[in-house]
Image (cartoon, rainbow, N blue to C red; front, side, top):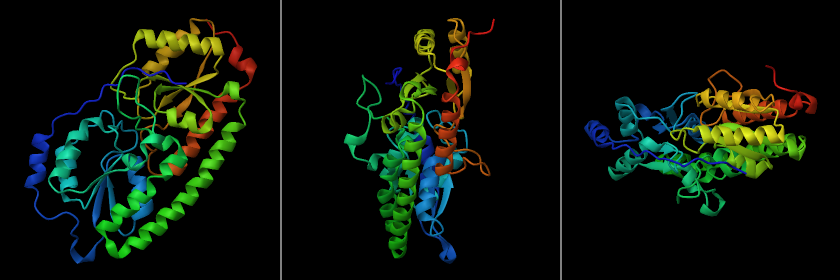
Length: 325
């Protein structure tokens, strides 16, 4: 079950930035001295995916860093220069990078290879972004098995860039798919250890619908799918009613989203006589910082699951204790 605020997708014009791209000289994908061609990825999650398939035969540059919200990200002139010089641009798609959507289209129109990895997935496996929009929920990586379905698309796109390494790209993609199959089974087994009635996940924004569907978790997002749509007072009060009635032990902030709305939610729940903890900070639209356990997609999935299980497995007595004055 998901509570979803109205989605508002921003498609900022990119005429000036594309003009900068057109001014950049040199053909994309041509590397002097037989160096690996450079490709650009938008989010850290997409960059990790492309690296697992492409490196060391391509060099992957990520535009966004750890903790960056792709819904709100706007391309800089430096980003455009990187994209203009790249052999390909890999992005998530389905308007995750909402303010860059028009820029991707214009880049493609000027001959740059662009690959929206989430848009390679079959439409019937995607969830809607809301009741009043034809758009799809872009947060597909929260279903590990579904995210693995993007690998053939990445491998074939890289094979077009470096044809002589095509079989190696396909081999790496197949090996990584097997690794993700093991991870998917691990997540399923770990979460199944929590009683079904306690598998209630409340997060800052509605990014975990695929996670809920894949692993039988009831999901509530305070904000909508797009973090540009802020939660209102009614959203906070409505969700506080649910948490208090269900005696949910913990709610979660996210690494790429301001914690203010969740803090207001905790206070609203406390006013109803139920003490709810902030169970930790989940990685939603970005991976963790380099050098941490969450610097990779696999590590991020494990970190999220460990945080969720630890918080939701707290004892019933702790969850039902009265709020402190």
